[in-house]
Length: 274
Ligand code: C2E
Ligand code: CA
Ligand code: CA
Ligand code: CA
Image (cartoon, rainbow, N blue to C red; front, top):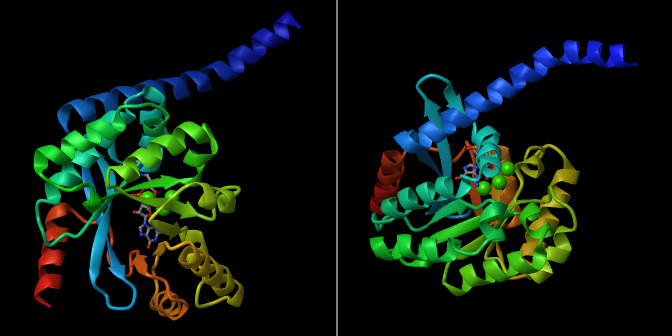
């Protein structure tokens, strides 16, 4: 048995080593990226579904590493959480978003919050001081949280979300429909907006069932006094259907991809003239 164990170790070690090396390299690269300011933010516009008015944009963090290339936030955000540096990422995103909000033509910016920020105290005060320095009112920032955030440590998380809302920040429930017991949480937590996950938008305009689900979510949101945002809108048929169903806001490649801050400023300026 001992020999077998050793044989196994010999077989699997090289692969584990490589994974481990990759992981260590990524951790080192992320720390360097944070230190050298290689993380930046793109903004994806959100429009009023009926009128086409610019209503705001979602801040999406980007990492273009000179050696590793572009790394997806879906990969490095979980890494940053595990490494305990997610607060540094979040504050960097918030600082850049707040700086951009000095432009009065941009109504509001949405910032994604990870569960780590809501598990401990301190984020609210940090966020408020970033805004106060720039003279930007909290109402122009919206924080997006996913259902997963609400599930664990519900009492503490509710306390912190209530604190953010009491301070004047807007709150959106992100990726709605992908988690569990979403309905129970909608009653317990107070949000301003509900974002329908893009997996539900995909088949819109093609399948009657997809329209039934999206329509129910829109009615649910409205019944709770929330605005409903559709994300991942890629096709004109999807937009037409969302309008017909009474969706409030749209976000997706069709109406505007994530873009650098300068491009969002131009878009906002043109929207003002029109
Ligand atoms: P998310 O919050 O659901 O963000 C929307 C994602 O959908 C973004 O991917 C965006 O680029 C993409 N997207 C936008 N329009 C379309 C479309 O029409 N079709 C399709 N197929 N995709 C579209 P991205 O930028 O790669 O971000 C991935 C995830 O990483 C985000 O999902 C969010 O969970 C996380 N993330 C991004 N930035 C931050 C951040 O600053 N902080 C935290 N905690 N998480 C972030
Ligand atoms: Ca989001
Ligand atoms: Ca989302
Ligand atoms: Ca998502």
